[in-house]
Length: 430
Ligand code: NSS
Image (cartoon, rainbow, N blue to C red):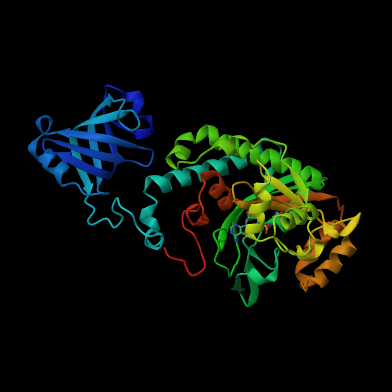
């Protein structure tokens, strides 16, 4: 018998096939058993008629429990009313394993309970849809960059120095020395850009964020392109094309999943270049006009970002933040050194910052001074300084957080469901 998967079942209409999967749900009406079977690629209704099968098979169907694993053989029938458009008329059924008391019954559970059962929660249709969108986003990011001359260069996870400030470092012992889990692959991408021109890395990054928010994880995935001979303008141009490509690709290839998530895609459809650009100063003015009391100099909080993003239909760039509030590697604007040549991209509909990036400091002496000002150990950055000693060029890049992007595109109000196993403040189980 042909083993088939549910997503391809339409090709076997009228034929006898075998499906291997799990019981998603079940109901019966005396002589008929309806078994919803899922196999990871989709869900199909299997129907067992008492008159069509042996008494043993019917008894087995009757006794099946939620999430038991089964092998079902039967004829594929088109049925316009069935979800997916097809049904399986089951003739033979085998039990692989009987699940007992599956804890996630088809009813409402609290988020804490579900997070504690994340290893099982992944089987639900909603989580399935989110993680398929996530996979599509990652593929789209890679395709965009691969097709445009960026070389994938993997950054290390264990690092000797901080990239994004010393307060959120996860420290570990490295044979008697201190090592830190990477906060960002950026510094290594700068080295790679001087070797390859245009590069990117994609991997997990770690930050010991002591605040509990809807947007912060301790372990998150970031895609980080870096470009030699590029300035802030070029950086924003690449970002708006990149983000638009990713959104449009998900809209065209993951329509079913977005429907399952009941995502209203009206706003997503409008995500096309160019994106509006406002300076930090303009952002401050907008916030003040909206009644926010804010001093020039600080970073924006999530509510501020929401107000800013609400002024625009599309994602918006906020560029030229105060140099004092930003990372040591950012290049000050030569025309106005109190602001840096950096930009954050804020997603619409209240999702906030999804990208941080900008032009890097390419001058050796200024960078050395910054490292001292930021109280960073210079020895650990000697290799990074070398990039300014041997053929330094203007260069720029950015980092897009995958989880925040998934939350935005799927329309989720918390990042915890955007990653298979979230690492959050006070949660590292399962
Ligand atoms: O700190 S960032 O703004 N920028 C960097 O790390 C640069 N070194 C990237 C670069 O230029 N190569 O973080 C970038 C993005 C940010 O916009 C978020 O989308 C995401 O990374 N991010 C996070 N996502 C989830 N949880 C946490 N804690 C988090 N921190 C940043």
